[in-house]
Amino acid sequence: PLPVEVGHYGTGGEFAADIGNDPTRFRTSQAICPPGFYCQSGLKHKCPAGTFGETEGLVETHCSGLCPRGFFCPENSVKPLPCSPGSYSTGGAAECTSCEIPLTVSMQSKNSMCR
Image (cartoon, rainbow, N blue to C red):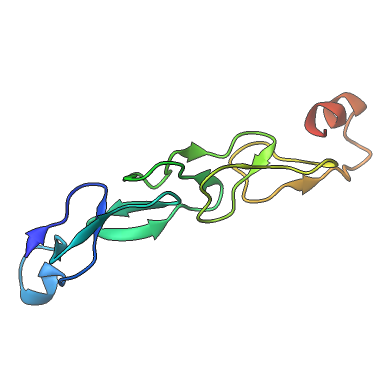
């Protein structure tokens, strides 16, 4: 077995720890980490909610980055999705928030947050 390359995940083989070696993942074959995922130690993980992964071979838990303001990113997102009219997000959001904002928030703040 060979070590899994950075940005890839093993598609065959076993954990070296299972055979008494260091905890590095070994493979009989490997694949590049697809968009919407990041790969560490030979394992494929979904990009967390609030982030997106638009390229292959990602290795960081934040994938390609945080979802921008005005967009939302559910778990495993490849691209940020725009909030619908009447909702907003402040960035890094897994979902958008309705613009039903309490009366205590100023009209200027409401207008800047909502489309």
